[in-house]
Length: 162
Image (cartoon, rainbow, N blue to C red):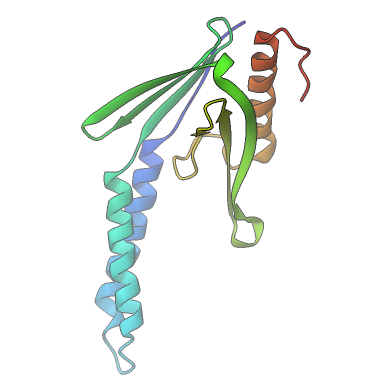
């Protein structure tokens, strides 16, 4: 069985953060001016600047490699000044759940997977906001869940069922 890797796109996360910060800066500068002096717009602008800058600084590059041959999931995470690798063995996985964040009505929906480990820990793969290609498409992420679950179940010598 071939391994497969899916990586986040930190450049997109940084770009979105920059746009949010610029919109916030515009609201901050323009919100307290004019005859109606909307201080709420000014404070919203300040919050957007802070959120945008935090998003730029906290951008994460994450690559998740599923290797059915080694029966492992390797999560390589790189942030500014820090890197970490975590290996999860298929035997540690109790369940895999599909998560949804957002709604169609607001136009932004992200999907991710939660690994429910036998230890009781929950580990999120393809976290929302990391702009993983395909993470806004339910069918794609559910396909990842099915593929991974079939590999996990096969590892246990059971019949794969999705």
